[in-house]
Image 1 (cartoon, rainbow, N blue to C red):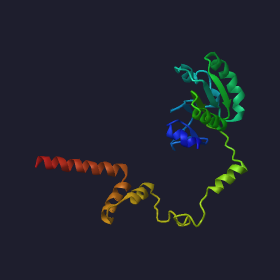
Image 2 (image 1 turned 135 degrees about the horizontal axis):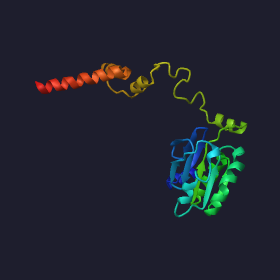
Image 3 (image 1 turned 90 degrees about the horizontal axis):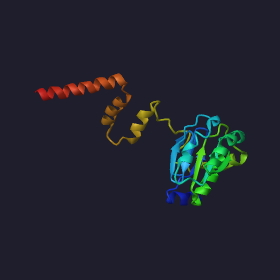
Image 4 (image 1 turned 60 degrees about the vertical axis):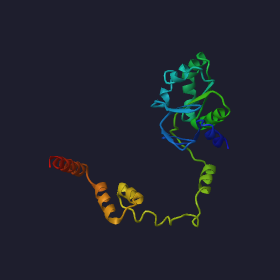
Length: 212
C-alpha cells in the first residue's frame, strides 16, 4: 500500500537491494551507492564504506532548503560506529538530523519518512554481506509458480535456442518470412570486419549509381 501511494505521488522509494545496487519502486535498478531525495535518485561515488566522510556528504549539506534528516545506510552493521564518528559532527554543524544504520534498515526508514512527506535524504551503500534468513527463504519459495501454472515446461525451455543470444532475440522479435529471417540472421552473425566490408560495398554501389 505504501509503495502504491508513493508511485502515484511520483516519490522515490527502494523496494530491493543486493551487493550490487538497489531496485527502486518503479522497477529501475541503480548500480552501486546512491543518493536519494524525495523525488530524485543520483549516483553517489563512494568506493568503500571507509570513504563515507564529511566530504562525501557535502552534497546534502549544500542543499537549500536543507533536508531535515539524512538517513545513512553504511552497508553492514559493523561499519556504523566508525562512520558515525567521522560524519556526526559535520552534520550537527549543518543542523541536519542523522539516522545511521545498516543499509537494509535505512531503506525502510527512508521509505517511511518520504511517504510521510518529510524533507529527507538518504545515502545508501550496498551491503557487502547479504544474509538470507530461513523466514526470507520461505517467503521466496512461496512466490514460485506451481508446476501446473507455468506457461512452458521448464525442462524444455531454451532447447530451441542457439548459443548466440543476439540471434535468439532477433528471431523472437521477427515478423517476416523465413527467407528474410535468414538474411537478417546473416547480419546478426557477421563479424565486425564483415560488417564493415558490407557497408563499404553499399557505399561504393551508391557512388557508382550517382556516376551513371
